[in-house]
Amino acid sequence: MSKRLVALAVTGMIAIASTCGAVDLGGHGNVGASLGGMLFTSGEDFANNNQIRLIGQVMFRYNVTQNWTAVIESGYGWNSYPDDRPDDDTLAVVVPTTFGVQYRFRSTEKIWPLVGAGFGLYALGVKDTWRSWSNGNNGTERLTWTSPGVYGRLGAEYLFTSGASINVDTLFHAIFSEEAARFPDGWGDQNTSFWQLRVGVSYYFKLPGSGGSGGEGG
Image 1 (tube, helix red, strand yellow):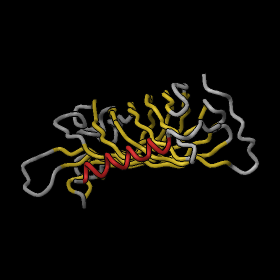
Image 2 (cartoon, helix red, strand yellow):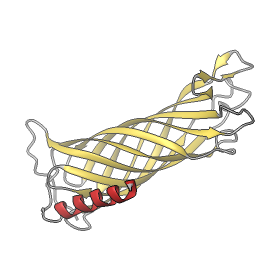
Image 3 (cartoon, helix red, strand yellow):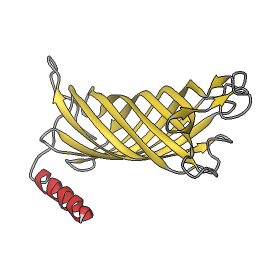
Image 4 (cartoon, helix red, strand yellow):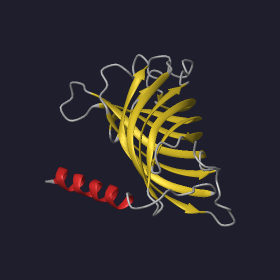
């Protein structure tokens, strides 16, 4: 029943949007949120026997022109690592805060493929349970640290003239997380990376004093 309701809602939104024309987004701001899955793909500990789990993010974008956009995002995601305990698994969490740019290509009036790239700070941590952090360095220091990283993005956005949009995209993040001097006994002694696939919704609004006349898509 729930799947039918979601399908009907999406169909209705697309039907409404099909009656609308394209929006000039130059000079507009945008706020949104996304939800998807993530998986650590490298690092001896991070990428060993891990399971895909959720990642949620919020974002702000400024559309310099119709095509070029500056993006700030932050969120929270994790992977789980099953073990022998009956009630709890080990968890590796990441809080990415990133800054980047993206470029939209015009496909139709409403569908815009996009590519993007950027850099950020990634807060990493390892938990014994949802309620407690693991300790590293022979048990003397909590396994939490923050490292720089970079990312790339590929996706598409469906624009509504009401100001709303839906986006589907995939991202790959490379994190320079090795701190072997601090955590010589695992997790913190390695670089890592993760892949994510997500669906998001957002809303465009005209900023005070902006002309709102961005360049047309190519």
